[in-house]
Length: 220
Image (cartoon, rainbow, N blue to C red):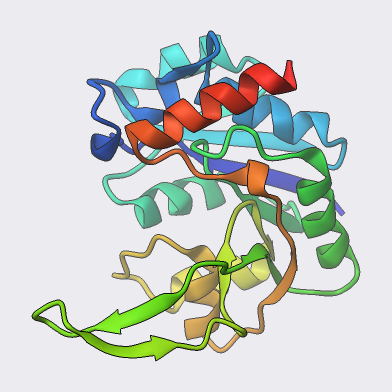
């Protein structure tokens, strides 16, 4: 079964505090986008990568990731993923991977694809939640302590049969979502989990970028 990975890279990354789209921010001299795409190909289980970027960054993205196909994304993340889905053709399996997770190890990607090949229609890599979680009210007062035993933090790549992901997007034409598996759940689909990895951390803030810089230096 053909596996295509979609990499949404149209976000501005305002919480990072830098004056450029997050996917084009560099980490140890290489952009997050380059690292994410190279990591997907290096896993050995991806046939094609499609990157979705703003129209004015298409040429720049093509120069950075010549092995990938670059298409124009949308205003919202869901619009961007829709644009990627339109480009995958007849591929049976599709992964959606954050460019902001540039250090994701190959075994995580392999586990997602293996679960799809074993018959799952939607797969997410997860980590146990280690912090104590509190539910608070509108005034910021603690309303309850949440049992974290059944909680998991979700990473990417999230994997799907192309049919399942397309059906989920078709069922929610106006949805704005940050989690593709959530759309599959909303459409009544089953989502299974595989083990994630702390290295698949998402770079959202300047602090995250400093942590990733240190990790990238160690991984050289």
